[in-house]
Image (tube, rainbow, N blue to C red; front, side, top):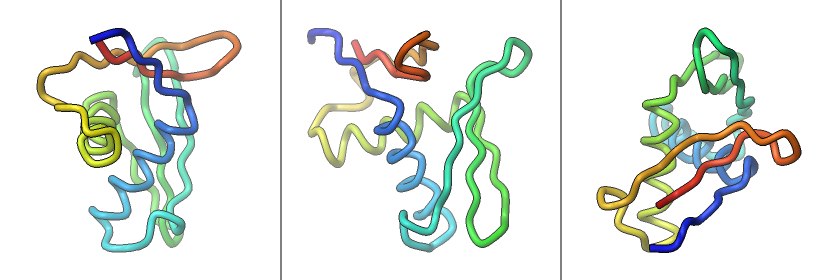
Length: 96
C-alpha cells in the first residue's frame, strides 16, 4: 500500500464520529481540538454538552482505524498509522 496522508480535518472528523458513538449523540454535537506537546505527545480534547473528554494517542489511532474501515474501506488492522506534526498542515496521520 502506498503511503496515504490523512489531513487534520479528517482526523477531527474521525474523533467526532468516535466520541459521538461513545456518548450516544450526533457527530455534529462534538467539538474537537487536536493538541501536541513534548510531554504528552498527541492528544485531543473533545467537548459534548459541556463535558470534556481527553483522548490520548491510542484513542486517536482507534478513532482513525474506525473511520478508515467504515469510510475508506481500508483494513484497519493491516495498516500502520503514525501521527505527525507538520509545520504547514498541522497534525496529520500517515497510513502505510
